[in-house]
Image (cartoon, rainbow, N blue to C red; front, side):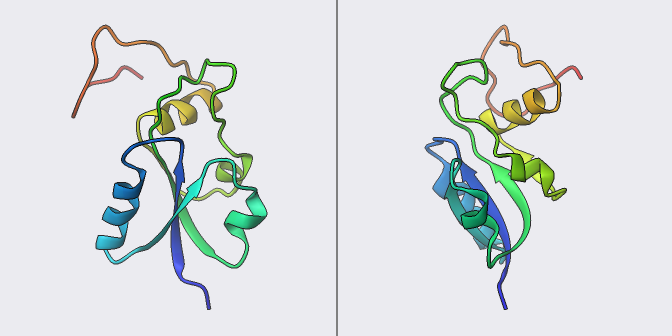
Length: 112
């Protein structure tokens, strides 16, 4: 019987390993997977319970930027986006990603 699993999709973040480790420290099984792995390799033989989308160096508006795999939203499972991962969610759900006036580190207010 497969473990309940959180999939951490890596979009090039220097912290992707740390994200997966922190999830495991909460006694939740997680696997770190490159963002362009095919759905059958990510979902088969796993009991996926949600996704975490890591940050990364790209912008959602760059022509060769990593894209959000369709199976993430199609799954209907919970998704947490961090940095670039949140930009991908906003962009794919019809939102607009715009530059901030200054870089933000830590908590910040956003307008929705």
